[in-house]
Length: 524
Image 1 (cartoon, rainbow, N blue to C red):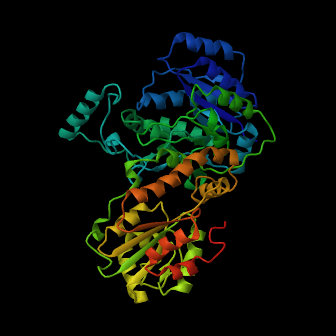
Image 2: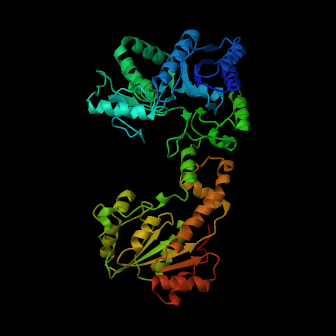
Image 3: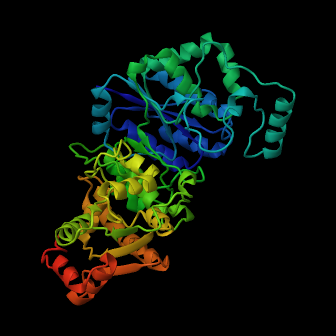
């Protein structure tokens, strides 16, 4: 069975370090601690005294003064790794942690997970070909030497970079080295660690290179592991669940994220807030438990982006430049039926087809619905959206009609803005439906905010946000002041709905009544 040597890099909160070391070693695993040399000497002494009698704990022989983005973080990691490799010959895996990381599975689960495959877990993407870096300098991280810290010595950091660029002092990557990039939170097998340490001894040129790169903790191990381990034995992922905001800052987890974290397909998570005392106690207790089952749903990132994306300017996108001057045709009428409950809209469309000669296509921009052959433009949803006006012009021609009805989800506001701005006559009809909790939970699963096995307790706190999001989608259609907008409602009487439908379709009220004669139109 696997035994894990945890490489714990930390710089604060000695009581939490002691508790974490005691917890992780209670199940037969090991911990190697590097406590930042910048931290208080009294704090480090407190940790040493408390753990002195624990044979499963060791300390880095040399403590480094660490700075974000500097080589010192890699150097500190190597010191802790060397200490662990020497002190714990029974360790089969080495797992990188920070003081802000905590376990979100049991030791039993973690050991079983690592035993399942004889592989390393480390994010490792091609530095130059991938888009892993979202902000800041890119190639300059490697091609120039960095002697100053961008966070604490910003002026000198960029002045040095500018001088090197002006003087043509760029440097090549060491021969035979393919630089990779990824998260610093990895889990490597003993044989991989031994090969990495041997590589460090054999390639002083590589060590010199990385000592003056910027943010080497995202490239050093990621690069070397690829050079010493076959690709087939590497899983390009981290086992630590972490997310970043749009500003490049790590997302922090609090007490009410406990159930969410346990359902993610990871062994640890960061960052756990120091104030999340209740959750931290629960996670400490979790590690040593046995027989615990975990329902893995893995919806954390989708939930975060959903909840933080509400109300942003980025909701609406500008029309694509190659379509701004095209038109559906001044003498044509496009009818857009907008409904969040797709089955309700599809039932209504079936009735419209049976009572009128209006051609209709359901949710063509949201799902791979059946479409006539239009030469390939219709084959994928992505292609349909890229060439939406051209697609609709071809549909008008295909049906040999100057009228066309389509269904659109209210979330696709960009489409509504685009079509109502066209020279064609565009009518919009919203079908306003009731949403109970069961539907909202199902909606969360359909759009990827939750999986089928996500506990309801994880989804339920989102229902208020989802309900307001649906209301927002409805309200913005009214606020947009479309040239012709009508609304049917599940709560409205038959006469009112018939009048709205008649106006939308351009038919008399009697035809609209026949269309609405379906007694289960709004049924779930």
